[in-house]
Image 1 (spheres, helix red, strand yellow):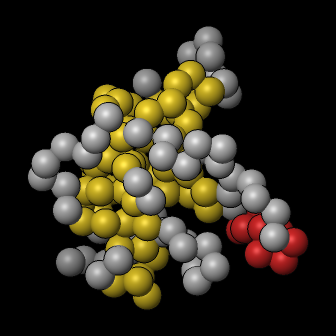
Image 2: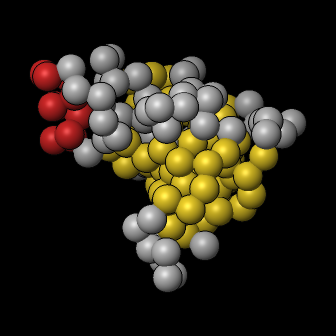
Image 3: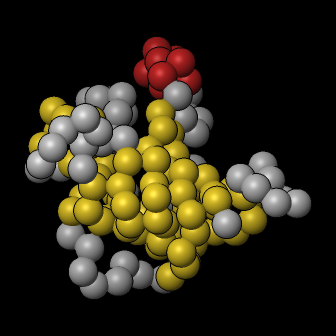
Length: 127
């Protein structure tokens, strides 16, 4: 099932999982500490991000869109590349080792804590 996943603003240790297809499309269908996704696309609403920065309003403006793999209580072993979003520094997701390069997609990984853990290649670059 294709889902949209974002940090829950009221429970920061959890992610909200919103269905993007099927009878529950558009509805939050669950919460989890670790959410596994495949064929991930990272999206930031620039207009909403600008409002967050200028007005100091807390709202969801970024998410990971992908195929749901599973939901766990903790991060499984084997995922060590950290993709993150720091809204007061940059308006895009980035690899913590190369913060100057936006990351827009990843093959597979887990959202856990403040990061997406997996292997990602920045769009438009051959690494």
